[in-house]
Image (cartoon, rainbow, N blue to C red; front, side, top):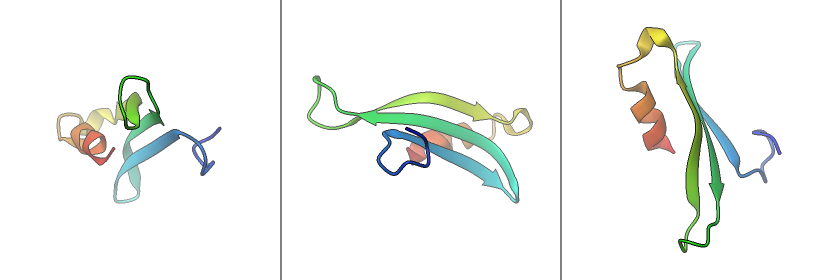
Amino acid sequence: MTLTDPTSTVHGLVAVTGDRVIGLAHVVLHATTWATRVICHLKDLFIDRSVRGAGVGRRLIEAV
């Protein structure tokens, strides 16, 4: 499965300022035996060094 496959449980988000990508997050949504709803695993979180500390990571996580 890929990020562009609409049936994939893997999803990606990007943070953009102007025409520049400044952050990305990859997550996997899946069922579990420990809960009655789908859970989310954050697999990757990258924020461009030039904007670290500005809340970009927090906003990506909140968007998930």
